Length: 360
Image (cartoon, rainbow, N blue to C red; front, side, top):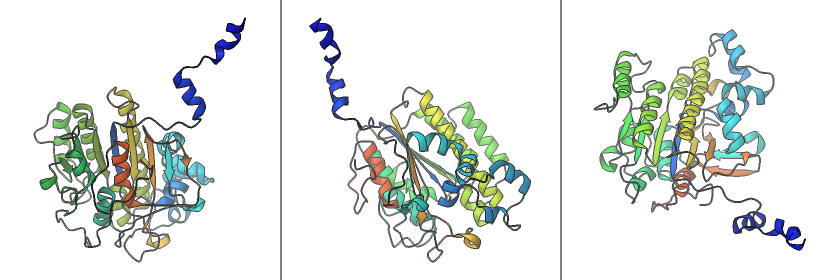
């Protein structure tokens, strides 16, 4: 009788640990996917379609279709309609920062509030105030991608895919040795029938822009690389949201945001279906800059109110399930590099790098 009464108390060491630590830390990551969505405003991320821009004849075409697809009276329902994977999976199982209406703030620390300075800050963990243009100048700073690629167990297992053709310079492909498929690059030589097909399709598809390809090609080149090469760190930079915004095409901007949300869902489903990645991968999503409000939503640079305001979302191994953060908190773009490294269990020797968001 005594043994029967005591049996439920005979706990394993794991059980004792769980009792003493009611909120155990998430399992560490062995792989990280870093995603950037160029110039996607926090306003759409947290509130969905902007009613003032939707109603503006100069910005929004195909009004009936847009209203059916994205308009809901409640801002929470609108954001779910625009980016369902972000809100139904990432915000439920991971964490999202930057809803300024709730006191959660994320800002860039560079003084320019546009792309090259923003991407440099994301990838190096520090603003470089000497970077004052988007010119194709090799980045003098070492990125977290380059540093990690030089560490044991990571060499040759870091890659980057981007829609904008300046990324080989931002990452300094020539010095770093990291393969960067960007702009209108093809897979050279193609290593699969799918890559050969993507090469042909990209060459036959016109782009609205001379320096940025459509994100669908960036996405599928990256997916194919994930399937075949199994990188430990991959960076994917989508660009359509920013370019459509610069052209004042709000309908296209919204569609691009929705499409990119679907791309990220594809990435996560592939990760979870692959035993190499499943439950061992962290996903980080951030943007390089914000945009103005009202009539200035098409622009971003120093002096455009709100163009320094960004957001961050994370999901997966090593990421706490905090949901939408509502605490009065200030985070910075320069914390992304250390967060990437910390999730992978390494500490880069990069000068002035901001601290990890997760404290690892």
